[in-house]
Image 1 (cartoon, rainbow, N blue to C red):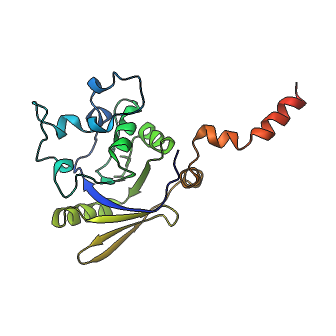
Image 2 (cartoon, one colour):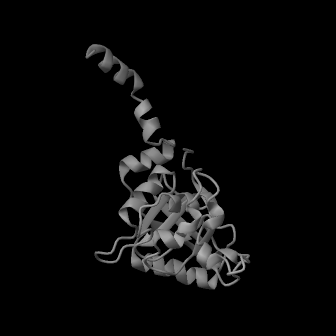
Image 3 (cartoon, one colour):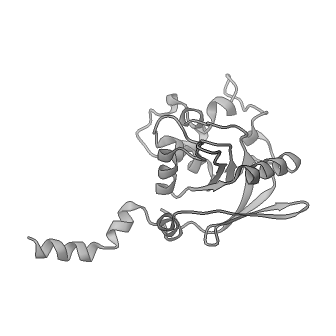
Length: 204
């Protein structure tokens, strides 16, 4: 897994709550036994017309946001089935971070989806509803606006025309370390390879 480094990218908003994993990648795209090539299927029901052509009304087909790297949604992103393909599709499209808000008991992200994102180097950022609403208002006025995601300092900055807007976020300390150091679960375990070998030698 690559190290998560501070980056600047275009911000794109899909202004919907409860975006489930079937919306992220419909089931007909799950036939491949490989873990690559899913980016083209991201949001395919919304992104493409029935004849396979691009839907010009969908945000990722608009020239200003076609190569976005920061995705913004409403609450409960990634709900539905636990298919890991949804995370692969988001990451392989080119997104490096997803922003969503919590609303009372409704989470920003479904638990399994959020955990799968962390295991695949994709940062999930939970902000307040007011902050996310502010971002959507900026996107409406300035499609294609760029943002900086700074994981080390837990900060998102939007380069809006009326000045930079900063949004601080919390993250689990262990997940932050794993993302910054590019450690998946296997790499994390291998850090203790010598200790594991010593234990096995001592206990036969």
